[in-house]
Image 1 (tube, rainbow, N blue to C red):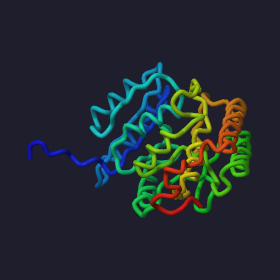
Image 2 (cartoon, helix red, strand yellow; image 1 turned 30 degrees about the horizontal axis):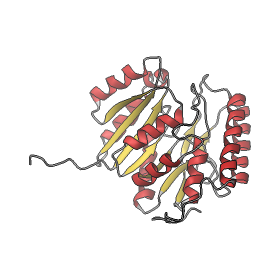
Image 3 (cartoon, rainbow, N blue to C red; image 1 turned 60 degrees about the vertical axis):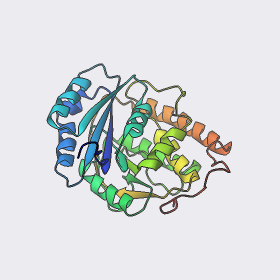
Image 4 (tube, one colour; image 1 turned 45 degrees about the vertical axis):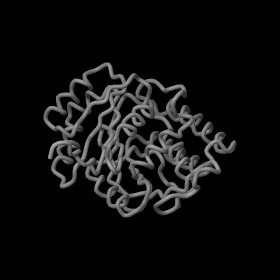
Length: 272
């Protein structure tokens, strides 16, 4: 019928990419796209190129010719938080999941996430630290720093969240857009981290969800450490510590509190 608009996809999968040529050439994007293409629901896969200076954009464009559900969104280099935000705000799906290009959390876990989201929860986060998870860990130093960081986050901000930093998270579309639009440490106008560094934007995102009474469910996954030379565990941990302290200070100052004109609790189960 002429003039009839196509229904939006059920799922938008957002993958930020900064100099991801290595992961792309080993087939990580092909794996994700091929999986989604064989599901019985409509989906889109948005790759946000965060100003890469390698062959990332060309390889994603090549993949998009093979899988129409894949699209490339190019942005100026501004760090992972800005790349994910750009993808989330562009997403058309009823549910929005973001994950890492390296597929350390395999793409098929979108089914577990969708099951929870369709069941009524507002957000789903993959956890490497709960019962049912299997993990193939990386170097000992990185494991120790990760556990220390998780303890710090639980102590200061998110006592009920076992793992805030796994790169696989999903939300109802309207929830995702609200939360990403409300970030302050990592929001519009904030100084953007450069390079492939790890950041703590996930912590701010989850604090915002908690303040708004959104229901967040941690789900077990099979997680595999993917070796990279682009991350410096000591420098990144120090940087993330400073970021968490900024989020904590914002929280103490009430900058994440819901205004009186906003409902303090929305659909879905409450934050645990």
